[in-house]
Length: 136
Image 1: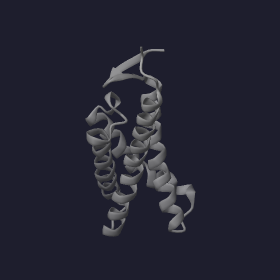
Image 2: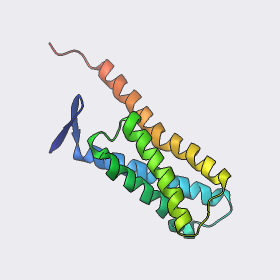
Image 3: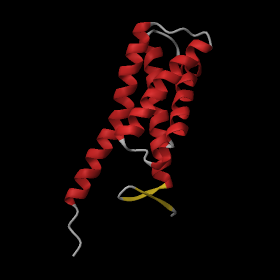
Image 4: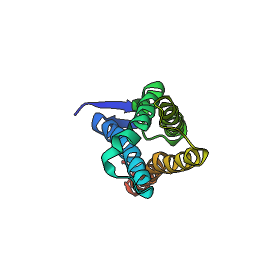
């Protein structure tokens, strides 16, 4: 399998795809949870999802996140900011509106989601490295 050398070790293309899929799935979960918490059906999920997916994609492209997709600092924080700002701006541009309380909840929840999985991955990778015996 082809690998890309990133940081201290190789990161496979499937790992990069997985990171992007995690981000997209968590943004989708955010949109679904939001709709359900307001008593809205999931039939309109795409309307809620697309602005934030757009912000996420913009973040990945601007930051070239495929180079270090699991990093919390720079990549994770940048993607979080781009997803929130881009999503809110796209909502405004499309006439969906943005209330201050919505912007606050969006910032908190997407921060927990987009930074949280990266923090968990970092802990698991660190634990895995600590358990590996040193090479002779």
